[in-house]
Image 1 (tube, helix red, strand yellow):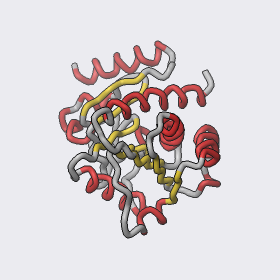
Image 2: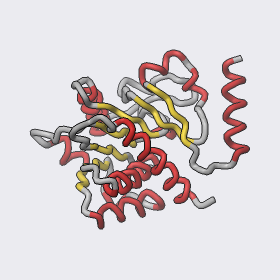
Image 3: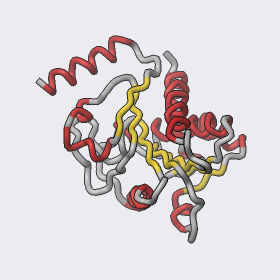
Length: 212
């Protein structure tokens, strides 16, 4: 199956969860924070779907637009053409004031992170968590909260997104069954993206083995 189809299916699943989280919000503005890989591409594709639903969207990208490639680059190019507001991370963090948002999407790193989050992206994670402490601001993590090791459920460094809801793809990751991961994951929901059933069954067997 083409990877861009999997990304599109992921975005459709994410969109449903975002709309659910915004169902009782009077001013449903969304900020989507997009990292350098496919997790960021999921965020770009999600922005398109939410825009088509009439939801006001702002997007923050952590690398230059020219450095996005493959499926992520394709989806970024599409939302650029749609006129969705897209800011580089420096421009966003340098703002004296930020628009009031009802929901922040963490599409920074997901399950592919192998190092601690530092620098400007670390500052963005801190901003996300601070915003999440304000009344009415919800945080949704794409696949896994950025900064959390999805295999063992432990933080990678000191910058970890604290999500209200995590939407993970294909199946639960082993670390999501760990008690210490709950404070970062929030509610966990699994979205099918059309991955082979053999992969989902293998994920299930790994989790059962880890819990045994």
